[in-house]
Image (tube, rainbow, N blue to C red; front, side):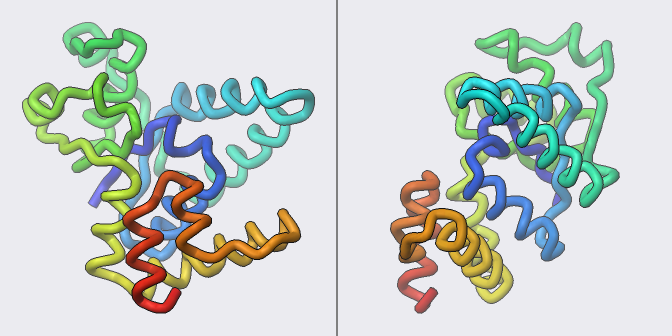
Length: 183
């Protein structure tokens, strides 16, 4: 399965690490466009000095880890598509260019299901997407979650129960499932 990851799911660290971790585990093939990665870097810049450079370093690592993930939207798709927010057309066009099965985004209102459906693409939030992958591959998703939790604890110096960490990362269903399974 190919999934285009919108900038809004790449920018929050824990969410990104969960998504890319399960992609590294082979549970889906991630896609994005250069513009989506640029949006991630610009969003990080708003956090203060040095944050954009840090994000660009992370982006370079992600691009190296997934060398076939970057897709360029076709001009014809950019011209013909319409979405409620014209600034999001490039995301749908990238999904089409990459033959994505699903668009993973938090931006539900600007990606109407019927519009995406006409292009053969489904839309799903990251929590539901990851929860669905957990339902099929619980061990693999749990291992990724444990690695993400351990890194969060290392970086913050505080304990992070899995459910609390996932809830803070806007992944409450996944957190609840992991906790119930003993993660």
